[in-house]
Length: 281
Length: 317
Image 1 (cartoon, rainbow over the protein chains, first blue to last red):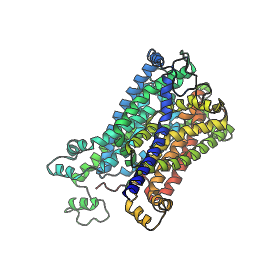
Image 2: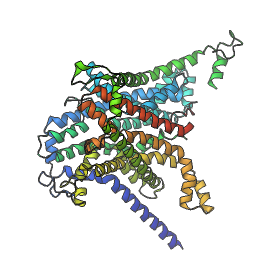
Image 3: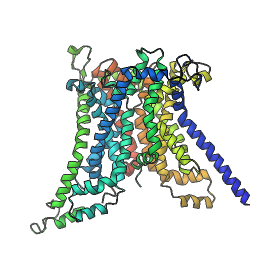
Image 4: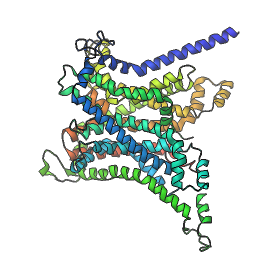
C-alpha cells in the first residue's frame, strides 16, 4: 500500500518534471538560438544549424571594435539609470502620499497615471518629435529620459503604493507620537521599511526603459543618443560588417545579460512587484 | 472617518453650528494636505508636462497641412487630414491587421497564460526554476527577441526555416503575420501568466477540496470556482494585454518593417511621421489611435465595474 502511494507521487513528480521541462524549453530556446548565432564564425553563420559547428568570438570582437555599438551601450545604460532613478524617487514620494495621506486631488492623480499607463505611446511620438526639435531636445539624453520617466511613473506609483499598503503603519504613528513630523516619519521610519519595494520597482522600471524601442527610434537620429535596440536595427541596413546577423546576435546577447542576471537574482521580488499592482484583495 | 476627526479637532469653539459648511481644517490636517500635494507634485507635473501639452498639440497639428519636406505650404485645413486618412485603404488595412493581431494573440495568450499560471501555482517540484525562466521572455528586450525569430525564419540562416524546407515565410502577408503573432505570444504570455497567478493565489484551497469531496471534476472546479473568483484578475490581465497588443510596433519593425501589408497602426504612423516627415498626417493617425484605445479602455472599464485598478483606496487608513 505504501508502495502504491509512493508510485503515485513519483509519477506525479515525473509528470511535473516533464511539464516544467516544456516550460523551460519554451522560454529559453529563442534565447539559446541567438546566443548560438553570436558564437558562430562568419563562415558557418548561415549554415542553419541550431548549435554552432565552429565556435568563435569574432562577432564580439567586431561589435566592441566600433563606436557604433559601444556608444549605444553607454547611451542605453546612462539613459536607463537616470530615468529609473528619477522615476523611482518621484514615484516613491507620490505613492507614499497616495497610500498614506488624505488630500484632495488624490483620485485625480491615480486616474491620470492610469490613463498614461494605457496611453498609446505612438500618439505622443508625433507631437514630441516636433516639440523636442523646437526645444533642442531632439536626439539628446534628456529627450529620451523625459518620456521614459513619464511612462515609468504609473508603473512605479502602482507597484509602490501596493507595497506601501503592506507596511506596518503603527510604527509611523509611534514616531509621530514621539514628536516626529510627517516628513521625518517618512524619512526615518518608513523609507527603510519600504526599501525592498522601492528596489523591486527600480528593477521593473529599468527593464521598461532598457526595452523601449519606439521612442528611441523616433526621437534620436545619431550615435549621440541612440540606444542599443535602435543601434541593433541599424546594423542591418548600412553596415560595414560582412554579415550583420552575427554582430546583431552578439550585441543582442550583451544587452540581454543584465536582464538575465536581474531575473536570476531577484525572481521572487520581480514576481511580487508585477503581481502586487494588478490584484488587490 | 477622517472628516469627523477634522471637525472635532477643528475650530469647534468659534463655529459651534456649521453643518454642511466647510469647517476650517486643523493644523495637522492642513500639514497633511500640504505634504500630500508636495509629494505628488514632481510626479504630477512631469506626467502632465510630457503628455498634456503634446496631446493638445497633436490635435492642433492634425488639423494642419504640415509636411516638413514642404514647410512653407503649412496651413490650416481643419478636418481634411481625417478625410484623407479615413478614406485611405492602407489605413484600414493597418487597422484590421492591428485588430486581428490583438484579438488572436490576446486570446491565445489567455489560454496559454492560464495554463502557465496553473503550472507555476501548483508545481510540486521545480517551482523556482519555472518562475525564473518564464521571467526571461518578459524581461528580454523585444527587439532582441524579434531578431532571434527573424534569423530563425531566414532561409539559409535559420533552423526553423530549414526545418520547414527553406520557404521564405516573412515575405508573404499571412505567414509573416503568423510569425509576428508567434513572437508576440512568446514574449508576453509570461506577463499574462504572472498577473493570472496573482488571481489564483486568491482562490481558497479549502473550497476546491470541498468541491472535490462533493464529486466535482477538475474541469468543473476550474470553471465553477477558480474562474469566477479570478474574474477581476482576468479582466485586469486582459485589459493590460489588449492595450499593449494594440500598440504593437517593435516586433513588426524588425520582422517585416510593415512590408506586404503587414503594417499595424503604430507602424503606419511611424512611417508617415519619421520616414515621410508628414506631421499633419502622422498626428491625425495619432489622434485616431488615441480614440480607438480610449474606446477599448472604456469598454473594459464598463466590464470592470468597481474592480478597476486604482478605484480601490482601501487600506489607506
